[in-house]
Length: 151
Image 1 (tube, one colour):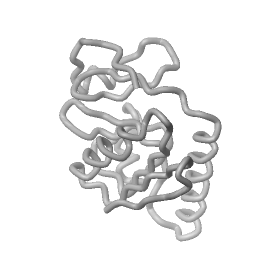
Image 2 (cartoon, helix red, strand yellow; image 1 turned 180 degrees about the vertical axis):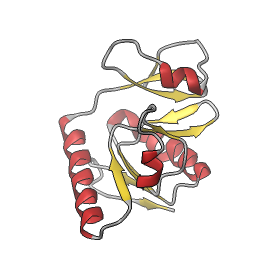
Image 3 (cartoon, rainbow, N blue to C red; image 1 turned 90 degrees about the vertical axis):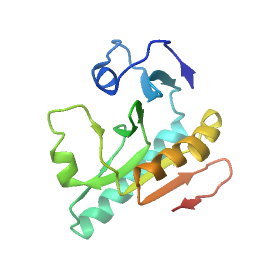
Image 4 (cartoon, helix red, strand yellow; image 1 turned 60 degrees about the horizontal axis):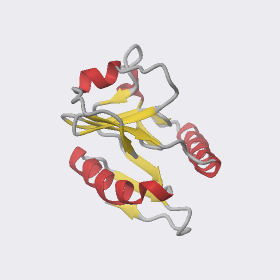
C-alpha cells in the first residue's frame, strides 16, 4: 500500500478521479492509497467466492447481488475496495449510472489477505466495516489456510 498524493481528496473528488491508468486506489483519510495488484491466487479465490455466492443467491432466489472490484464508502473521506461483497439489488439499482462505490452497508464483505495487506485487512478494514454496520466480515487468509469470521 503506497500513499500516492499529499493532496487531500473529498469523497466526490475520489469518485471522479481518473489518472488514465489501470491503478486501483482506496481513499484513506482523504489521501489516495495505491493498492498493489493481486496475485493470481488472489484473483482465483475472489472469482471462486463470487461464483459460489452467485449460485447460492440464484438457487434461493434472493434479492441480492455479489460484487467484485466495486467500492464501499467507509467514512467521510474513506472508501475501500473489498475483494467481494454482497448487497441488495435495490442498493445496486440506485447506482446504475453512478460510480460503483456503495454508500450503504453491504450485508457481507470478504477480504483476501495478501502479504502487504495483513494489518490493513485484520485491523483497519475490520474497524471501518464494523463502524459502517456491515453484518458480516470474513477474512480469507491463504497463508494461514483459515477463514476467520468476524461479527
